[in-house]
Amino acid sequence: MRLADSLSNPSAPLLRLIKTLERRGEGTSVQATPITADPVVVVEIKENRKLSPDELVELAKAYEQGATVNALSRRFGVHRQTVNSHLARAGAAKRSQVKMTPSRIAKAKKLYEQGWSTRRIGREFSVNASSVGRALRHAGVKLRPRGH
Image (cartoon, rainbow, N blue to C red):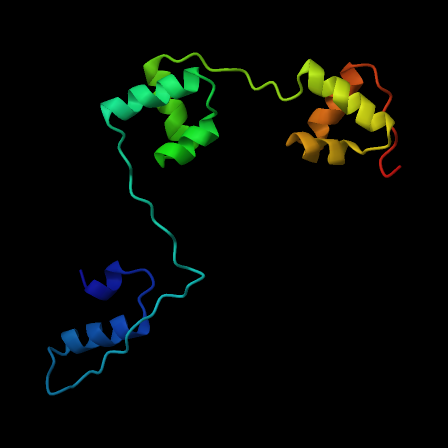
């Protein structure tokens, strides 16, 4: 099989090299143009970080003491899904993600009655506006029409 046939989209410099090789370099002098990567296309590749057994114990202990998955992801330099996998293998009980606690709902009701939008309240609590709206409806608050 020819080299050119095995490449799906060869660059111009590579095509010149292939033609030169096919001619077996008979009296030709090829000047290669360096290829520079387009900064928009360059993808950052992260090293696959392996946690030591001590780090795995520390990760599980920190989670059980209240650290969030995202915080652990940043702390140990791994993806949050990796943290979840390690926690599952360690048998750690996953916490439910209650975003609107009773005290937050009470505060949200007061803010909503003062004219705050669910979006603004959501930003205040770092939750989505739909979570605020749902919590307020469950608390018996009649929501205003959008944009009012």
